[in-house]
Amino acid sequence: MKSILTATLLFIGFFSFSQMEGNHYMLTGKLIATPTSSADCGTLAVAQAYQFEVVMTSVDGYDQTNIPVVIQCPELKGDNFFKVGATYKMEVFDADQQGYSIFNQDVIDQYGLGTNYWAGDIERID
Image (cartoon, rainbow, N blue to C red):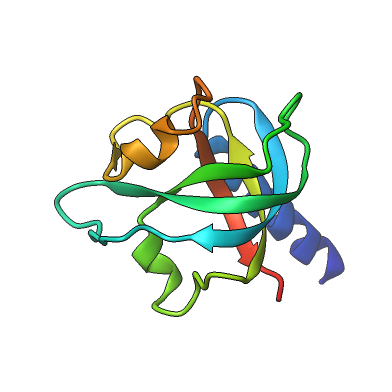
């Protein structure tokens, strides 16, 4: 039974990583701003930028206090998942994910990063 559980977890982990492209990093951040308007995935693949205060990150050379993270179809996390002031642990990737429209690109542009950071697995830890 234990070996089946281990194999299942490895498969899920591999499948999760295979869905995202780019370099893989870890980020722990406190949510400081959510999008002012919302759009849901449906006929369009919607992504929106959420702003986090950096608590800890493995992003090489990232020295800003805050970071915008693009989240695909955020409504799928549920109505109360994203809460300003809550802390989140997530994997982020630095390559644009094809087929998604970022509805609030202006939020990202104000950081002048030159790359977008896309959330993979994300969990609220408080």
